[in-house]
Length: 397
Image (tube, rainbow, N blue to C red; front, side, top):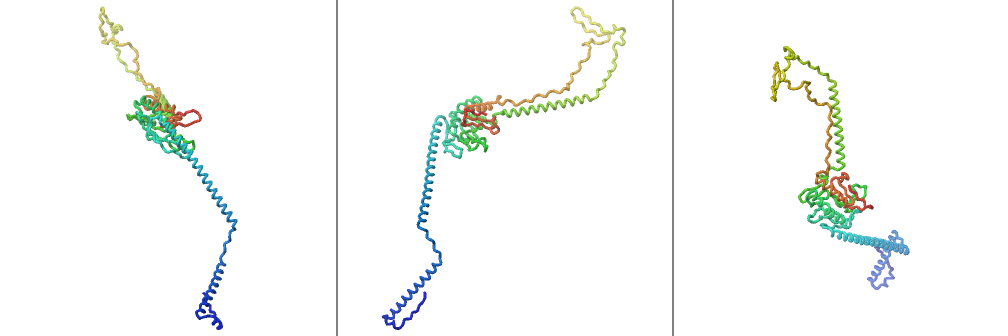
């Protein structure tokens, strides 16, 4: 505050009633002056700060309108998207319910233990009404080990295949019905044959099943890898190897025979030995007649006794002539015996016969049947599926 001292002339003093009144007037005057000074200082300080420009009322209204329009557009787009999503979900629910109802109707026609699964939607893979197939048939009940994730059409096809084909063939070849069907793969979201650059596998649609083998109630098993026998390709390979080995042995025998012949040709012939002179038994005979053996004389039917010659020589026991030389082993090379080729895998093999008959029967029920004869990837299992094609052609390999 600024202290002010105001001096009033003495002539004004009589105008105030008392000294107290004078002091009050002075104080009020000082307060008014102080307020004026402080207000001036405040206005001066505010003058040094920038003053924000006022937005024209028209611009403010336009901005508010634009913001409101944008908000309305966003809200409308969100509402449209939500409506479309709801429509798609509703349509999907109808499709799932329809597929489930159809599956239930199909399963009602067979004897099978199944568990309904949630729809599978994995990109291009999946099925709207998949089931877990636990077993098929009754008396006997055939366990699917492990249980397979399939669509209902495949479940029905597997049931009918087991009932109409596999069981009669098992009794014919194995003597017992099958009680277990061992699987390798069912639903799997992948491309055909496990490749990355090819069409989607039927496994990705829960429309295929891979089977490694079967087992009967007596514990007898028929696994594809061990029981199929040699494939056609393996038989051809073995036959080619046997022929090659036989040709090699013939060449070796020929080389050995030629070597023996050259060795015999180069050897010197042995000098024949001169026999020693034997004493002549007729040297001391008087005449030639006397030196000859006397003939035997017989009387009637009695056999003639052997008569010794005058020189004590026995009657000759055989005609003369050179002694037959002993047989010599031929030096000619012998032809090597042909090696035994692999036995026919179908011959006298109950397990092989069963598996091959089962494979053949599958070709009549499924769109695709693959096995050991297809390629190395299927050497240990059967693949069956219900692939839909533009033609009625089936694949059986």
